[in-house]
Amino acid sequence: MKLLILGITGRTGKLVAEEAIKRGHKIVGIARDMNKVTVREAEVVTGTPYDFETVRKAINGCDAVISTLSLFPRSQGLFGKFKTPIDSMSVSIKNTVKLMEEKGIKRIVVMTALGAGDSASELSGFIRFIVNMTNIKYSYFDHDLQEKVLENSSLDWTIVRPVGLTDKNNNISILHNLKGMGKINSMISRNAVAHFMLDCIENGEFIRQKPGISNI
Image (cartoon, rainbow, N blue to C red):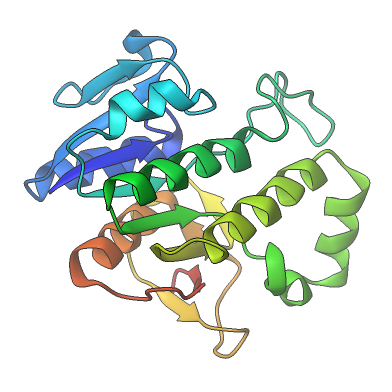
């Protein structure tokens, strides 16, 4: 398959691209600076998925889409200002969905976060407090919007909601829940998320579902 990966320069998107290539897929990504794409086998379109015509160029010939987009703070911390528009994820997904529907591309897997949309009640009271009192809330607002775009589309979407992401291990074990049913833990490696998203694409799993995922 040829896969469009939105967020290919990010920590999770890079891992998705690397694993996809290992599995024999062709990869295309979008980046403002081509030098930031470390996956050398990837085809790169210069620009941003916030721009409709850039997505049109990138999606040509693709069979499916994976998105690991996130908001990028200018500085680290809970109150960091963002480098990208605070609606960058939802607008990018809106552009992508419109073009997929035009071109007859059906399959998309999108990473949001546990606590987005109808999973808000799955967060502990303490975490909900942190989200609501800090700039993390803007990420959740935009996750909510992009989930609604997908839910209102005709696509075969999967919304993947990881718990806290870590770079500290390569554990690829997965626990998942659906509609809050099923026990999951508090952390997951980005590598596990990458494997799970590709498995969803390859195996046709969790179509029009929103699994929460963690490591075992």
